[in-house]
Length: 274
Image (cartoon, rainbow, N blue to C red; front, side, top):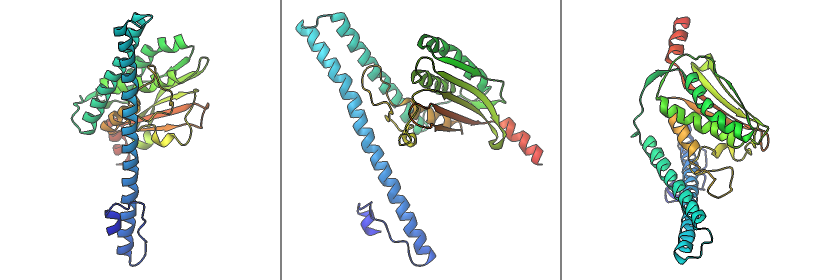
């Protein structure tokens, strides 16, 4: 244990001896494993944020220098690229700030009685134009749900990210399915966003909610910030809910399921049990 606390985190403490000693050894081994995971996530975070800031900064510096030197063949195009890269950096900073505030419990969230199906339907309606332009079929089935307590704007942000991603990663001719349903087994309502798109490799599934982690490694102005799903999870969990992802692999589509507790369902089930 002294060697582990000195920094040798890969060392496994032998699990032997009386029950109390075994329990301590197992606890130390679990702690070491969690610290290693946290350290790796921190290294990945620093590497990703450094790369995601360096790429647009290099582009901005290069094109601005070309404009100043009079070497840009099309100054308007160069200025447009600078604008897009700066906008992406600004979006990254805003999202990082939001994520930090949510994790610190400093982001104020309103609480009102909401029908999640109405919010889901409204977001899907706004994004239907994007789906139509891309040639993706958007199927929406959102029957009225029991009320939940939450912040409508933040939940709309969650759904905008999930449905928007589903459309983005589904090729023309594919489909996106959005539906709401009651889950009596866990006293809540669910929003399911399923697509027939590019899918997610099994090795990437456990990491899709990490900050800056992106399954699509392509770099460029059209690439996201890698923060959307991290923020989405934080918002869902701040509402006492859960979010999960499933995919059978590349090219086989992806399904995101958001569960949110419903006070009404909890009351009804409590009365039935009583």
